[in-house]
Every structure is written in structure tokens, then in C-alpha cells.
Length: 383
Ligand code: SIN
Ligand code: CO
Image 1: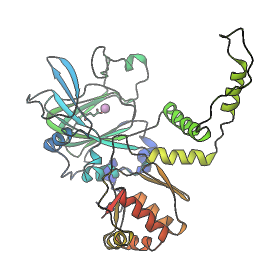
Image 2 (image 1 turned 90 degrees about the vertical axis):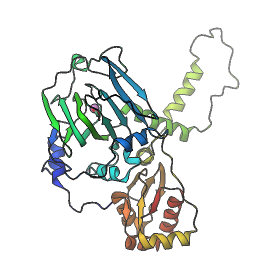
Image 3 (image 1 turned 90 degrees about the horizontal axis):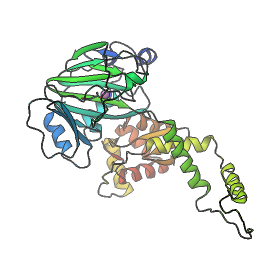
Image 4 (image 1 turned 120 degrees about the vertical axis):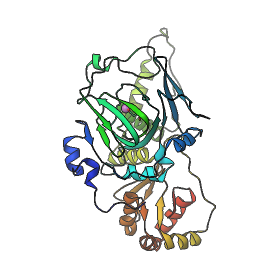
């Protein structure tokens, strides 16, 4: 889907991305009326139910029956018949529907390293997931029907505000005290920074899309980085102690073993290039449940002829990142040939390349071989 050439300021309530980012992002909620007014063709109840019946799509069903909350994980062969108090949540809808991907790409004024996915929910009257906190920034876009949102204008920090109800399969806030509320109509959107408590309740049937962001936890990121450094530094090294002496204190920490561990850990080194390489691989890595569908193979010549006629697009699941002379796609690094650096950068940023730009890029042998390989792996497609 072509990108609007200029940023559509309605999306952020008349603000430029910079104005929004400096004022609201990670700081305060923002209610935007008519953010995306002409929403058409996005998944409805039926389309979401179809997605939720698939075992390669993550879905949940949250219900309140006689005052008791329950949550089930999909796939679901059918949805409840009841008219009240349930909601179906489908994760990663952008990976399956190009129109939802196009909505998500409107938020590409934030790095794709921060974009996560679009979760969509269908709810019947009274349906919702209860009052809760999310750890991430989110834009809650009302797609169909109406929903009453109530929220806190500032992040919850105290233990009292964060306390959850015991014995419920969801993290429901025990002391939710909203200080703002609004009924959202189709096209309206509510931005919430991390940790702002909120609750959305459907007024009749409604569909909501959550454009979610991700922020790596330092703990998880460090673990993964050190794992990569360990793999690289010591692919198969092991402690060895030929010629060791007998001990009479077998429970005492072995001093020579301790010294050898200290030497080993102290010898692990990394530099800026290692960090950059790790970041490129990590943030371009597809999610664990993502699989690509490779096409029927074509020779490089046939591939190039067809691509040059119509251009190329990235698969919805592909993350392509670049920095300087290196690029990363689907968790793998590649060298960016100097002559085609600008064009490949454009493909990464816009997620598509028109026929002329593709033809020019294919004139470079290294770039043509790279694109052919990506196409063969199902990472890019003919436009
Ligand atoms: C929903 O769509 O019902 C839930 C969105 C949220 O509150 O995170
Ligand atoms: Co939420």
C-alpha cells in the first residue's frame, strides 16, 4: 500500500511527530478524535474469528461469567454465543493482513526497533480485559463500534496502585482509580504511555486495534548479548586440570578452578562492532512463531526480469535494518554493496521499491544476488 507522501497530522491530533514525541511519548496520555477517520476494510468479527481458529496465530478469550473472570488461549473453533461480557484478542494481526500493516506503518515516525505488533480485539457489550497496566506504549484505535475507556493520566508507581487482584487469571488492578474517561468512536484513538492504568469496556459490539511498541528489558537484552559473546568466545572450550594435586578439603572452593574461571570470564572482550552486530541481528529477528513461505524457485535471470517489471515489497513479517555498510534481515547480517546502499536503505525504510528503482538496483550484481536470495527465502515478494 503506498505511503502518504506527507505526514498526516490528523493521526496525532494536529501535532507533528516531533511535537507529539516531546510532549506525550512515554509521558502522558493523549486522546485523539478522528485520528484515522476513513477506516475501511480492517478485520471485523468474522475475520478475527477466522484468525483465532488458526494454530499459527496467538489468540485469547476473556470472559466474565457470574462475576468470575476467565481466560482461555486459542485456537478457537467457535466464539461464545453469549451476548455480553466476553472479548476475543488476536495478537500480531499485522503479520497476516496488509491493511493492518499499513495502519501500523503510519507510526513509523518511531524506529522499527520499537514497533511491536497490532493486537486486535472483538468484544460484545460489556466485554473487556478489566483494569490493568501495560509495560509498553500503545495507541488504542477504535475500529468499529464504541468503547468506554477510563484511564489514569499518570503512570502508576506505588505498590498500592500496582496491586493486583488475587486468584484471577488476568493481572487485574485491585485499586483502579481512573481520573479521565471518554467514549471512543470509530477512528478515534487513545495513546497511553507505559504503566498508565486503563480499562476499556465495549458499548455493544466493538473492534479495537492496539498498535503496540516494545522496549527491551536490560536484563533480557544483557542475557542474550552475553550468550552471543559466550558462543563466539568459547564455542567448545572447557576447564582442564591435568596434574592437579590431591585435596583434603573437597568442599572448599577449588582455588585453581576459581582462578581459571576468573581468567576465562575476564578474557571475554567486545567492541562497538560486536554490539552493533548483536543489535542488528536481535532487532531484525522474526518473532519465534513466524515462518516464511518460500516461493517456487526461479533462476536469478527470471527473478530479475520479473522484479524489474513491477518492483519489490518486503514480506509483512520481514524486518530489514541497516547502518553504514551493514544490513540485517530476518536476524542475518549482510554487507551493503556501496553502489546500492541508498536504494537498499530506501527499500528498508519504505518497505517497497518501484520498478525503476528495482531495475537500477538489479544492475549491480552483488545486490541482484542478495535480492534473489531474499526472494527465494520468502523475505521479499514481487510487488
Ligand atoms: C482490548 O483491546 O480490549 C485491550 C487493549 C488493552 O487495554 O491493552
Ligand atoms: Co492495555
